[in-house]
Amino acid sequence: MFILQKDDSVPLYKQLYNQIRESILSGKLPADSRLPSVRDMAIELSSSRNTVDGAYQDLFAEGYIYSKPRSGFFVSALDQDSSPQAMPVKPGKYDYPPGPPSVFTYDFHPARLDPDSFPTELWRKCFVESLRRNGQQLVQYGDPQGDWGLRCSVQNYLERSRGVHCDPEQVVICSGLQQSLDIVSHMLKEEHSVVAIENPGYHLPRSVFQKHSYTILPVPVGEGGIDLNYLKAGRSTIVYVTPSHQLPLGCVMPVANRLALIEWAESDGRFIIEDDYDSELRYHGKPIPSLQGLRPNGNIIYAGTFSKILSPALRLSYLVLPYPLVAKYRHLYRDYFSTVPLLEQRTMATFMEQGHWERHIRRMRIIYKKKHDTLLRAVEHNFGTHATVVGQGAGLHVVLILPETSHSEAEILDRARQKGIQLFPFSAFHVTGQPEAVTLLLGFGGMNDEDIERGIALLARICLNKLLSANPE
Image (tube, rainbow, N blue to C red; front, side, top):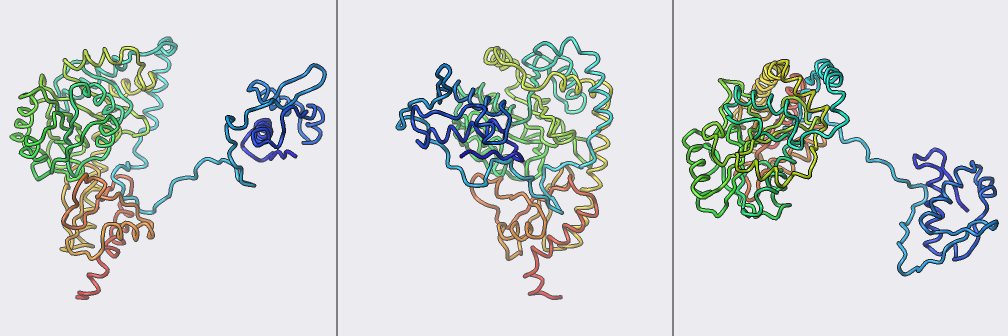
């Protein structure tokens, strides 16, 4: 007996198909047994003939049943040992999409942006304008390297604001840093096998390069950025760095170290991948110029993204390749198509051409500086001398070191979660080793000032409760 659930998201004909198929594979419907006619099955199920006919036709097309003229449909003879095994069906259980993610009252995740920050109306106007101007191009494939207009806009912006010296021919439009690194990994793996990464450092590059079978060399990070002596002692021929705002510690690589790193790269055909992470969000003084600008013709691959300022949902990023790699990129990817929709690229180009991008950066710098300062005041008020802040003055997070807490990181994260506080584990940034003291990463981009203050006050009680109870004064 077959049962159809009318309130199920699975179409009725597909439910019937699945149930008959399972009965055939399990042997409940033996070979050459006759199925009820379309009319009789429809009456039995109180459904339409189209529902039954649709299920029968799919089963017939896949060979589960066969037909005899004027006799109806019959079960095909299958080799049960080699036939696919039917999945066990739990009564009353059906496939549903995963539920919504957990919602936290206080979300200190470092990748969260201000929920009201996206320039919806401006983006809509640029989108409509791009749609109107580019209607004929939208029926064609775009440039595999990215839309020329957007590449020109990116080149102009980088030259003015980041000190990057390049031509539009060197710019590749990608769908996020993940794809950017995937492209770089693919281009370099014929001649390189070991990549050095910062420790602690961003986990995404580590994951991407590992999946391309690279050996990972974790290099310690100090106040001046990556440890150059440790790097030079290793056998890596590629290094991934975040020199303008190290993730997660927030330090800036001094110019002397930058020049030494460039010399390391040029001495034996090595490559530097410069991730200009959070470069626009500097709250004191001017943004730090790029490493690439010090040696435009060097072996430096520059990677940037629109995710941290505009929106991670757009999946828009870019690479600036040194000229020797441009030819290699075009050879390797000559048969590929751009992974970023052309209309989205044209919209971003229009957004930049009309000056909205740089105005948006200035606006977000003001908004995030206010949140940054609110967080620092809240930490000072609630933690006092029991915590040390590092990495302040830029970006969307700070690092909080707790040398006196009696709780482990895991305990703090678990207790915080129970109180509605979302924290990203600092330990995830370590390839090897752990910080000497419990360390927390506090992002502030996704919360308002009031929630930042309340969240920090609650977090302080979680982190310091035993300490304060032992020292009531």
